Image (cartoon, rainbow, N blue to C red; front, side, top):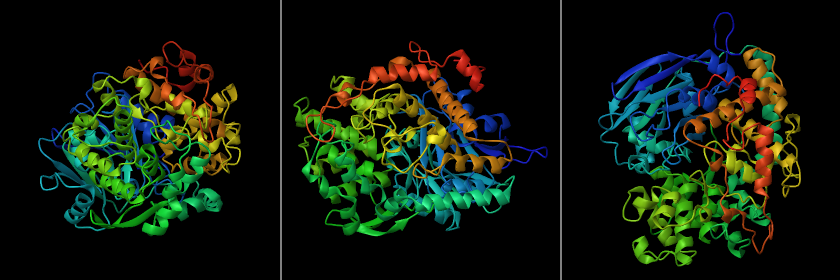
Length: 622
């Protein structure tokens, strides 16, 4: 797919940068054409690459673990919304596939410097950062950066680079202190969820600053490609979803999602909440908004900058909290104080910490406290009454610096359950990853997404709650993904969910923005004209299925079995009030259909040999 007779890599630079922090050796490695042909770039390529080097007994926080930072083949082309990067490794939080996806400008700058990815191995003796200027790379002492937050670190790295247009990824204090769900951050965006920041911190790598000026990817059919790119951009700009995101960001979803039963409240136990209107995205924009913000090559501009100014904290410019953050630090603990949520978001961003897992583990403590299963002495004397945002803000700092109860909370929700002898059925996590803030009782297919997502509970692995809704403008019927009654536990739901999982796996390799949803035929044409090959939606489905199954094989190698494909009972318990009153999926029925359609063994959880042969994965040993 990727090369012609002259061995020119369309879409790719054809080169990876390798950095061994232990030996301090920096080298380059040619892109593997077999991997790029079968998995494209991004997460698919990284998963196939890391499969050969990471084992079940690899300690994620040891020098033996490997980080891969990848861009995608459409990055730096005229195609819209492909400027993202992905960071992959074995997760210290879950012990399985670790993947963090982020926008911003680092991915394109990495490609400008001539690299499809950066492979980081080993561990530095003391804090360092990596400086990359095209072909010139060096490992530099970072002692004066250690202990600093993301904002200050980013400013200093740009200053040290001597070029204000250089781009930065780095960790904050959470990554340094090995908080299991620490992020890798890049200028207001974050590769989050699975603790990639902790992996970076374990290697004493504070950050990477990069500047590239020379490379531009080749395109097999430039004229036709640019025509399709413009058509794709026009479509994205025309959608109501884009217009809503540009106006309010994802915060606009809080009140609408509450109305359909998608917003979790009171640690997943409440069906309706009158104070939800105090958290509306419109209110957030009205009181705090400064300006919009966009990632490279993206016309959606869903990002927003706000100002915070009170007695406790003064911030001239910081990121506006997203829907997930508002839900986690707001409705999940019945906190209706919008300013406290904005502060929580700012703290997590600067400390470099995932807002979903951080808020979820805090909300779990609130739940246990209010049920009388723990008391003040278990939480350093804090009162965790519902709605108490002061304690929430103090716990964020304690987690970051592993102070007192924060040392336990930094290990995550499963560790809290083990400490206080709480059943896993009472904890909102799947494969140790905290469930994101979309309720499976409002869309039954989400149960399959959370149970089978490669990195643990993850809504971006299959946004069925959005795509399958009858009123939604996203049309994926060309992939046989159909809109339907969301309260369905039938084979149709299982099939559409599975196909969407494959499609989003393809997104993780291309790497496309989750909010960009042009017709799949447009995506197929972009791939076809980029590489100069025959390619249609049927081949797109096979490619996505191969990437998804590749991640499954990685997890099986890490020890995952069908016993991991579960949903906590607390998420299946019907709610007594609200839009989803009395509703819950038949998860076991859906799961049986899913195994059947996937051609996976329901006992072992492994893809059948027949399926592996179909996908060209039968040579992998698990």
